[in-house]
Image 1 (cartoon, helix red, strand yellow):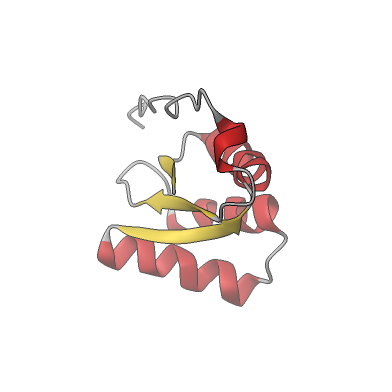
Image 2 (cartoon, one colour):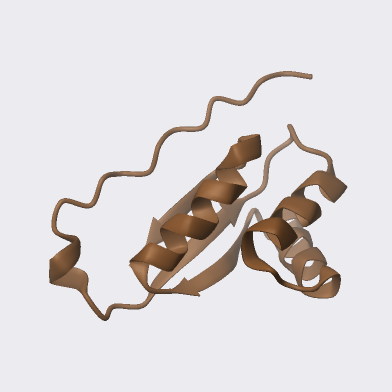
Length: 94
C-alpha cells in the first residue's frame, strides 16, 4: 500500500486573537485508506456513533471533503491529532 505524506497543519501564531471563534476540522478524501479504516478512526477521534462517522466518511468520499468537528481550536486540534494517527489528510479552518 502506498504511503501518503500528510503535511502538517499551518501553525497558528496568534491563537489568543481567535479565542471564542468556532473552527471547523475538515477531512479530505484519499485513495490510501480503506473506507472502514476511516469510519473507525472518525469514531475513535470524535466518539460519534457508527452511523454519524459513516455519514461523514461517505461525504468526504463523494464530495472530496467533510466537516468532522466544529468547536474551539483546542478541540479541533485534539480530534485532528487522532485522525492523523493513521495519516488522514485534514485541515482546520476559521
